[in-house]
Image (cartoon, rainbow, N blue to C red; front, top):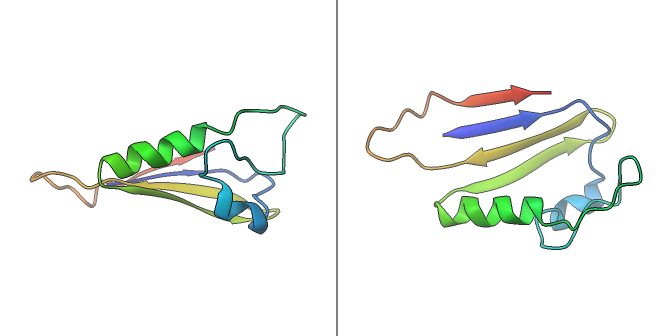
Length: 87
């Protein structure tokens, strides 16, 4: 199963993508001066891997980002039933 969440925001700087899923890290691009702990994506990565899946991001500056979560399904696999959320 794939779950994709896309936006058409500012995108993530290429130099930030390799560390984006690390605990206590976040993009240098901060919105509205807000500072977070940087645990949300690290938790998502851990949860995905614990279920045999993975999570990644594709991003283009000025065009937006797409986060994809891939999880294996059991015997009743419905691989064609992907979910895509657009914001």
